[in-house]
Image (cartoon, rainbow, N blue to C red; front, side):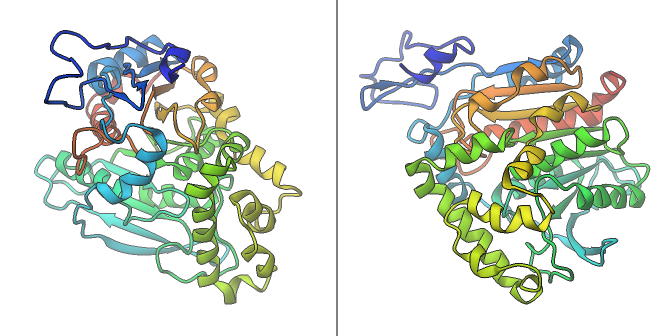
Length: 399
């Protein structure tokens, strides 16, 4: 049974007049039968904890109610995930780098896009600011980050990218990297950015693990944050479900092993600093993310077991404590964040939270159009949401 027939999300759009399979011209709005399987399309499921937030999104961020048409030759989740980095363009962005010190003697690399040429917000002190959090091994150079910067530039906003310790070419000054559960570095960055531009509205957007980190921060701080709103894209909600999915043979071959080697490469770059406290031989023998986290991440941050770390790092059970407007975008065919683990029912219980669930899109994929070089569905959601918050956010901030 096709995925959407099982979940019954929204209105399906079957073949209608003029959409015959025999048509010589096929666009991304057609439903195709590939390898004897029908690809059914549906509008995203919008789940909001309050009618007020739901109406706000429908009015100012209408893309969340539109049917998402995945690229017809790249509709499957794993294909979207794999091909996005190679297909999408990398807009040119000139960053200004800043290194800030941490209380434990470490340093964090921030990449700023100041947007001094902003016509809409010429006053630097009040220019809306977006803090971007990349994924597990990502930095400010990732294509999805560059597209977020590009969308923000068009709207006149300033952006700053939070690169996790040791990922952006800077040295580790202490034997500590990062994890999804520990929000100390993120807290320091948010307060630093806010102190620099205290009169500018501040929003945070996290992608993949960056989204998990942001969710854990929001669950910890509630309303006590300088952020006026937040958005997360393809976050993992339950790490136990994520690693189980990623350890399936095909997913391990396509994603898990590669990401594990990327994490090990990062450790190797900082070997002299990290070998003081860790048995790096064991770390380098890891074949899965779970094994890497067991030998390295959970040990670094003082967790007795890998299970303790995964439970603490999984943000699903902290959603009830989020105290500012939060939009979440997930795809049901995301192997990194399985659809069954998305906390839809919990979202209904918090008036500050809305989740948009698409049937297709993969992990940070959301490709659309025949040749998806530029804007993705995720980019359009991001652009409309941040604009809605900065221009009309007062309508919901007091929820």
